[in-house]
Image (cartoon, one colour):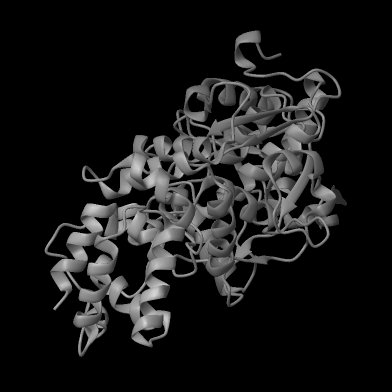
Length: 478
């Protein structure tokens, strides 16, 4: 029986416990983030607990940078955990303990096959076009037949007859014949555990009741169940977990998701693409799960509504345009002071956070990401002489500069520097000149911002302030 110290989180009877178990060989990619989200929501919906396990047993590929990025990405998405992270590498002795229990009870055996023998076995299987799997050559042999001191691995003695059916909460009933499984290694010759053993032991010791993961792990469930059932026979208290295997995410073209589709780390959506966490949370939620036709669902609503019955069986398709459209919605909903702080951090030292907060209601209206807000805010901090784009320069040709002189003279006489007053004054001037308002607004925009796109021109005048706005108009007037 495992000691009390070896059980990171046993669960009370009836409590739902889920876990997210990333390998820190890379950053938290979009598929992993969705798996984490579904585990978190299921536990929160049922009033249970959700746990984090870092599966860092691959010492050569696991990095502290990746661990930090995973934890940071989860925190940014707002996924909190009910206990400190469990690091799988810290638990190798416990994993080995279970392997030896299985061996002592006859559910596992020592295999002395050499690497050369195993390669020859696989070559023969390839030649005969047979599945590559261990042939059980040491399954029923006496270990005494091996040379004294010969290295060995411990293999699980898997059932050979019959079949196993898993009632998967997403995939439905899935059946595999036991003859399709082989006696795989659970403890290597150097005494270190394999992934299959470590996962099962950790899930048991952490009290995990529901294993919610990608459907690329579905076959692993059939390989892991024999360990669970053998240990339940040995000491009791090892119930089968409830499985839910979620279809993977594909690209917009239906192909397997790759970097060209958006299979990047969560931090890329935050740092490079300017996506808000609540937008990515909402998008990932709707990527394979649905509640009617609703697209915009808050964190609180998601916690209330989420259940596995809403998870589809087909792969979902990642669409960056849909994510950006959803992000645009959340930008418009977001607190202006919060957005100002995020945008100021992207602009740098010259940013005026108070001015950005004042400008945010007009800056965020059409933006789909924070980068577009940054671009839209550029005119606020531009220095004179103003850099003018090629398209904007075209708006300053011909009689545009003389029109700007008229605008400058009229606005300079205006003391009520408010949007409504400035608009009324400019419209009156347009009528006097016999021109449409656009004929005035276009060269004004070019002169004030150096571009052809900006918030409403009268908002621009107010945000720049009287002195700066007039100075920019004067600089471009004839």
